[in-house]
Image (cartoon, rainbow, N blue to C red; front, side, top):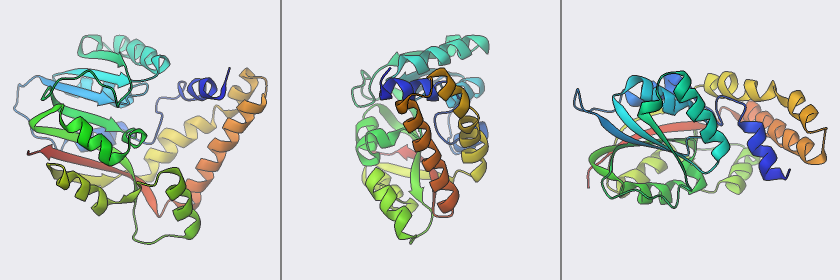
Length: 250
């Protein structure tokens, strides 16, 4: 099993593949206005195992297309959708987010938690916009600086890992320059990182290493995860995920 397959195997066993919570999803949803009784057409892009997909399906009269490149994640989402009686509301699609088969003006809402960085924030906003109806909503969580200045170590780290990292004002400017009117924004709280993401993955470190016989690749993956967690705990005052909700106006 190669590094890529090992990463999938490691992350498929957690409820979330990034920071977030049901409360965060519902808070973002509260910024969206829609006609009462309307059946909403929603795309959840980069859905992973679909924790937020299930929340949207649970609370909305909707039809959701949940997109991810990795069938292992989609298999888990399908099992959970069936388990919670939501199977009729969710259709999974194994596809790259930069090669989607959607039609112009197809969706009322496009949702993506912690995944748009794969394309890049600006590129994703521009590309996905065409799939949204005028008046439709884009809801995205994206790594964001929470201060205007920060220590050089964390600045250099994120500039290397994701050069598009920016402050909230920079992200909002991208939305406004591409035909969106922002309607809401908030930072994810520390609990969305620690309780819902980092603690669960820390709890499976030993089992993962045992399963893969302490292979060199498995050890490298765990060390990289530990480094990411350490970086967050040292510099959490300077960055988080920002949740951006914006309405397509043109």
